Image (cartoon, rainbow, N blue to C red; front, top):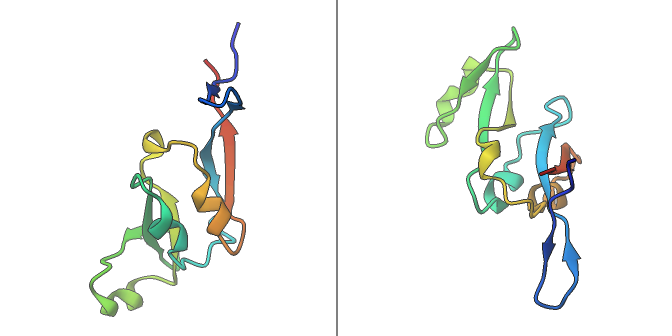
Amino acid sequence: MSTTFSVTLPSGATWTPTFVSKLDDEKCIGCGRCFKVCPRGVLALVGVTEDGERVSVDLDDDDDDEEYEKKVMTIAHQELCIGCTACSKICPKKCYTHQSATI
């Protein structure tokens, strides 16, 4: 029997965190807002080449733009997500899908 993971807050209310499960890179514009607001380092910015291959992006080097067609966010460390949903709240393109965890 599996149940949904939830937490009882000091107020007595129950909170069910929803954890990042997918990111739609077709919608993503690579603005980085979600990356900046994530307190846990769950996300990473990558470049997508003409062939659809993902390549790392050096955030300190502006000359990398020739290596890829666009930048998109990716879920780099899903296991670090705490379920705050800050990424989806700030995303202007609504790229994120979250799910509750079962135990």
